[in-house]
Length: 219
Image (tube, rainbow, N blue to C red; front, side):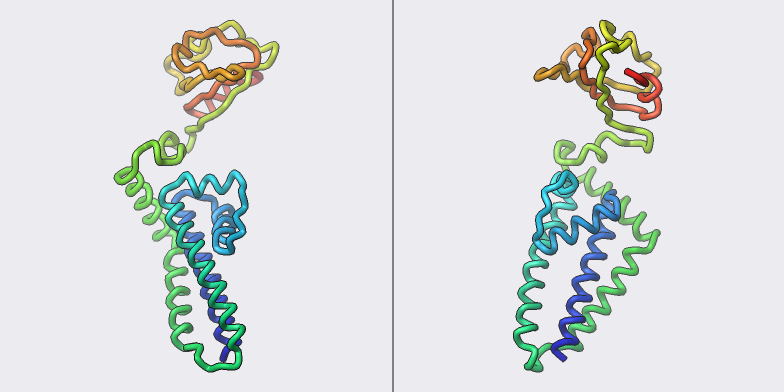
């Protein structure tokens, strides 16, 4: 019964991983990234990659991350305790089996496409209603359309845009905005549109990704 308990509890851990992965996906995270980060938090591995910022900078994902860290620590203690008591019968195997079955049902429900869409809409609605814009990831604040993008364009040494202003390069009808110009250690935001560009400048742009590529091809 002790060995059965361990297998059932490991199944519960696996199910919790998949349930939280599905919730992370509903917040807009890629499934492969979501699963890796869930396992990382659950095991306390703590991979310090750029992907981890996708969790920390998002208020909903941050809450889920806190739960996973605590659940992972608790699970490790349970499994160690179970192994050390393999000769005892106090494992409550049937009760744990019921919990495992309930989590499996919940997993299948969360993986349903309709539920995923509903959760995604709910997550976005909650973010807009309960959090300040400064607390939200840039994708939820600025990227309103599939074609929207925040891009950094670097000007070559022989750039044809040198000595021109942004207003001279981009028409008012173009769906492209200049957020700021990075020039070495300086970020030019005030009067960025009227500033004459120099080779080596980095333009941080927001707008239609296709149009940005068309305008600044071979910049």
